[in-house]
Structures are given as C-alpha cells and as structure tokens.
Image (cartoon, rainbow, N blue to C red; front, side, top):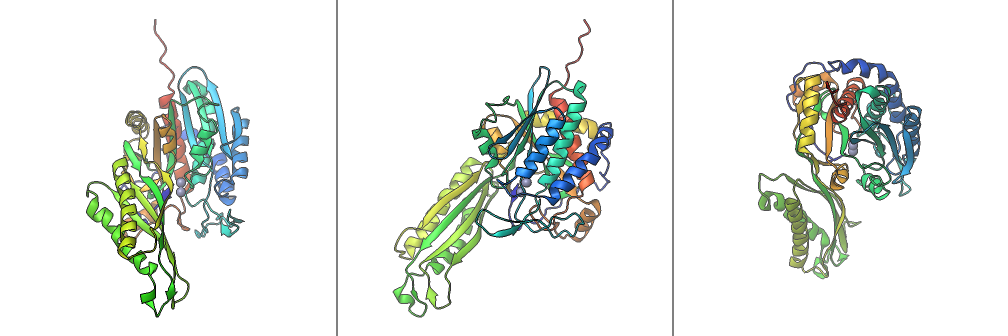
Length: 440
Ligand SMILES: [Zn+2]
Ligand SMILES: [Zn+2]
C-alpha cells in the first residue's frame, strides 16, 4: 500500500483491552499453525526483495503451498504464484497476499531487522525492508492455506491463493490479470485481502463498506524557461519563479475548486531545477502525488493541474508550454457492500465488537482495486499492528506513530499475524460455508 510520505498517524480511540489473543474457538486453530507462520515471517522479513524481483519469496510460498497439496503455478505476471485447492462444488474465493518489499532502511533496532542491500533497476545501491508489512500478510496467508487444507470438512468450493508481485509499483495485479489470472485459473466469485495498519493496536480487525482507498495519480510537470546569467534576469525567463508560482497556485485546487465534502490531495513531492546560484536554468521539474475518492473529483484535479501549469507558464511568457505527464494511476479501492456485510457479520459473531471495528477510509492507494475493476467483488480488511503499550503512550502524549513505509514501522508480530489468520479463515468459511444437511 502506498501512503502519503508524511502521513501523521491518526489515532482513533480504540478500546484498550489487549488483543494479543484471538478470543474464540478459532484461536485454538490459529495457535496450532502460528509457529510455522512465525518462522516464515522471520525468514521473509530478513530476506526482503524489491518489486519485480520477488523470486526467492515466490519460491518459498510456492513450495509451502505444494507441500499442503495445492495445485501451484508460478511465474504468473512476473513472479506471481497461484495455488488452487478444489474441495467440492461451491464458490471460487481468491485470497491475495503481496510479495514485494521497499527500498527503505529498517531502523527498528529489532534483533531480526533486515540488513539487506541490493542494486535497484537504475543501478543504485539501496536498502530493502518490509516496511509495508507484506511479510505479515505472507505469514498469515500461508497459515490460512494450511488451516483450509487441513480442515476441509469446514468448507466447500475452490480456494485460490494468489501471491502477487509489485504491489508497491501499482503494477503487479494488472500484470497477473494480463497473464490470464482469471482465464487460465477459475474466475473468483469473491476476492479477499488483508493489510496491516500502523494506526491501530495489534489484533484489531477493521472493515468498511464502500471506498476505503483513494484514486492515486502521479503527475510530472516540466516547466520551460530561457536560461542565462543570474545577474541579467531581464535576458531570461526564469522557470524557478514560474515553478514557485505554480506550486502555490496548485494549492488552490483543493482549497478553492473542490467541495469541502470531497476529500482530495495535491502534493508537490519533488521540485528540481538549477545547479548554481548565478545561473538561471532553462527548466524545472515538479513531481505530484494526487489523491481522490471519486472519478469526478479525480478528473477535476487532473484537468486543473494541467490548466494551472499552462496558465502560469503563459503568464510568464515562457517560450513553450510545460510538459504535463500523467505517469501512474491506481483506482480507488471499494469494498463491495454485500460482501463486506456478510464477512463483517461473521467476524463480529465469532470475535466480538472489542476486536472487530468499522474503520474509516484513508488517503492511500492499492492495486487490489484491479481485481474489482475486472468485475470481481472485493473486500480488503485492515489488521491493527501497533504494540498496545506504544499505542496507549501515543494516545496519551498525542505523538505520531510510525506510518507504513517508515524505517521505524515495527508490527507487533504475534497478535497481528494471529488476527490476520483468524480474519482470513473466518471470512473464507463464511463465503464457502458447507450447506446444512437436509432433514428429509
Ligand atoms: Zn506499501
Ligand atoms: Zn502494502
């Protein structure tokens, strides 16, 4: 999942009871598979791989599924893994985990912290860590695969376990679909996923009906001027001054053009131009992150960015129009209302309202939306990951907790993984319930 870089963790008041133990019959099953799940967590945590390079990670998941009796295919959409388990007639349900890690240096100080460094696609040496917690998702996903393969009398249908590459690039889901995920394999009736959440105590399970993540767009703007000597501005057209005006004018889109009832973000996250104090450069580059929940707001933001960039350049007499490039887009992630109602009811029934909460949407993006765009009802649940005493201290002091993608993000692994397993197994059993025996 991708979040705004300087997101401050928004603390909601969650009942501060401990969720270190999943509180129902499912807990026994979860505890039984946890040691293997934790071993996988520590392994992938210490051997993270960047997006599109998840070979070793994918191999570990494929091997695990094969040992459990799944029909496993690898290399789907790059390094993607698909494991299918057929168990009689019933719905096809897909459960996704991501495989990729991030170029972030882990600074948690944990004894099992990642020290991996690698060379990225541009040839730069970078640190690598699971700062988004995809290692948590993989550990839970494999444990869920184990419980489902073991207790086959508890469900009917076809379970489709999907290990997806390159979520952080918002490209892996599309790559798997383009490689026949829904044509070479059974087409799911439902698709499920979980994501850890750095804003809530470990063990909390969150659901929300409707949009939960935003449309995420990246826009690059290159502003052209006319370079020259810094002491002879009258002979130049200064793109740094145009860029400065453009950055400020862009801030008026959300504040003046969008309704206060429509959440939206326009962030200029990078600005590059010039090399020396006494040289006026001939161009400046801006990189923007743009977020919205609806298509109407998204279209307004993108067209306003284009209009303002061109208008400011024209006002300054720029020699040519700025180049406005729309580079990447993630679609808003919408939890299917009926699917959400069914699964949240099952979770509340088994685990109770102290652990299961309706949590608000956030300004982040996620390519799980691709499966929903392909016509499959989707649900992504949130799993709180913060150690309870750290959460309580942050609540008391008002200080921010490390967000996902932070070098300091350190999920409280046991309660987080256990809650994720419980949520996944209960959701799958609800959707693939064994029909009641006829009394005739
Ligand atoms: Zn992420
Ligand atoms: Zn993520």
